[in-house]
Length: 417
Image (cartoon, rainbow, N blue to C red; front, top):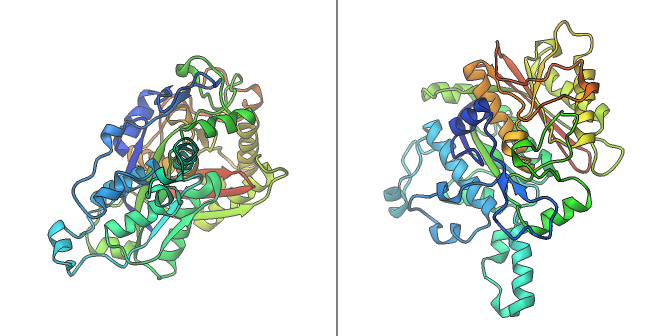
C-alpha cells in the first residue's frame, strides 16, 4: 500500500512543499480572521487559505464549483494536485467532449474523503439570507453546497472516477478514517487505487460562538504566540482551513506504471471510547495507537516520530501525551513527538491528512519538523521527547493521530518505502 500522489492546500501555501518549508522555517499561518467581523468574539484569529491560490482549469462542473462551499473547492483542488503528482493518466478535455476515455484511464478507482462539519458556512449564510430576504431568495446551490458528500462527489464526477465514493463523518478523526478505509479497500483487492484525505473550512461566526461557549478557543492577543501545543501556557486552539488528499495504490499497480512512491501506509486502526462527549481518553487513544502499530507490524520502540493531534488545548494535549507514554512504556527508545497545529491551526477533518503530508515529507528528508511556539513545555511532559527545533534524524516509521468528539480515535502508521 503506497502513496504516489500528494495534494495540500492550507494557510502555509498550496503545495506539500509549501507546507514543509513553512514547518521547517517555523512559519505561522495564523493571522487576523477576515471571513467575517470578529468584534463580538474573544478569539479573532484563524489559519486561513489564500483563495487566490485555489484555481481550476476548464472542465466539467466549472459553473457549479465556483458556487460550492469552500471545503468542496479546497478538496477538489487538493485532489487535482494529488492526481497530477501521481502521474495517473486522466481524461483530457478532448476526451470528455468526445465522451470517450483513454484506454488506460484508471476509472475504476474510488474516492474516500473525511469531512466533519462540511458546509456549515453555507448553512449559516442560507438561514440568514432566508430570514432577511425571504425563502424565494434562497440559492438553488444551497443544498448541494452544504451536504458533506459533495466534496467526494465533485472529485469523482469531475474526474470520471466510477468506483465507490465514500464520505466519512467521524468528527476530527474523519480524514484519518477515510485514509484507513481506502487502505482496506485496496488491501482487499476491491480497488487498485483510490483518492483519500480530508477537507475542512468552517471559519464562520457559528463555529466561533460554539467553540467559545466550550472555552476551546485561544484568547491570546498575539497570533505569533498561539496556539502553543504542549506549552505550559497553552490556552486553546485556533481554527484552521485545510485540505489534504492522496493517491493510494497497490504496490504492484504503482510499480507496473513506474510511479514515484512517497511512502508506504503500513498500519491503521480506529476505535471508540471516552468518558465524556468531547474529551480524549488516554486509555482508548493508547489502544488505538497500539492497534495501528500492530497492524503495521512495527514495534513501539521502532516508532521514530509521533505526529500528534495536539491542538494546544489543556486537557487534550495532556491526554494524548499520557497515551504516548503508555504505548512507548518499556521500550528501549522513545519516539520524538511533534505537532503542526502552531503552524497550521486546527483543521478538524483535515488534521490527520495534514499530519500524513508532513510525515511523508519527514520520511523523504529525514527531518522531524518542530513544534512551533513551544516556549516552555508543561512540566508534566518532562519525560517526553518533544521536538522544539527541526531535528535531522533517521525517520523510518511515523505514527499519526487524530481524535474526534464522541470518543472517535484513529491512528495511521506511515513508513519509508
